[in-house]
Length: 214
Image (cartoon, rainbow, N blue to C red; front, side, top):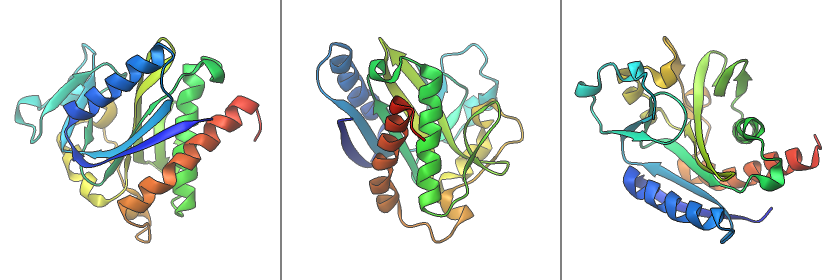
């Protein structure tokens, strides 16, 4: 596949990242531009999908960072420094127009990345995202417009990303423990190296699925 990768840097304001996604999304739904992967770290922010059930933000009026309601699926999560955020904006038509399969491909790409850095990440039955045993390492929430994806994943790379999760119920999962790559393996390198390594694993997961190869 022809995937354009854009590294937007750190402390990216959430609204700015959303606007960049929107511009690329509009081009892709009209057949313009290339499939694109945005990689970044956000300035601290909580997000939640457009849902009536906002119990995962029980203390919304007392949260330490702003809250954005957005057009992805899912309950509340946190984005901030120490966390790799990826927004794949990809036309799913060549990949079978299968959103469930795409979610599994995102999980697979993150598992491959973690394995590369000796972090034993896995799936858990019935739960979206990736885990180390019962500790959640990455969250996934996507949107689709005319079979073009947007939003994406948030992978905790350093322990700096973890404390703000204590103010919410991450992804609506009571009692969930969040973890980071470096918490599980202190030898995991800096964010810049993890960010640089990721795109090849996304391409591998998508290409394997499109060809049916293992």
